[in-house]
Length: 94
Image (cartoon, rainbow, N blue to C red):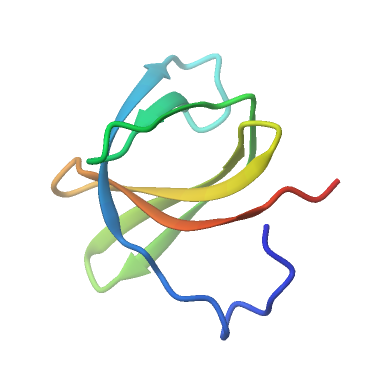
């Protein structure tokens, strides 16, 4: 992800459409494979890194750190509404 500290990053929280696969053989059962922004930009996900739940009271949001090989993204899935959001976008670092 971006090398700035998380306190310096601003959440985009943009609604996105996500193509994903769901299977028990996949760690966490869900793997996003591509997403589209409201502007029509399409991103094909090459690699999924860290996946973790975040809790806000009874609400659970799953965060996925992903990359297309050139840019790193954090996308989230709200488990209650089943809506996806683009939270962060930054330079890709190995």
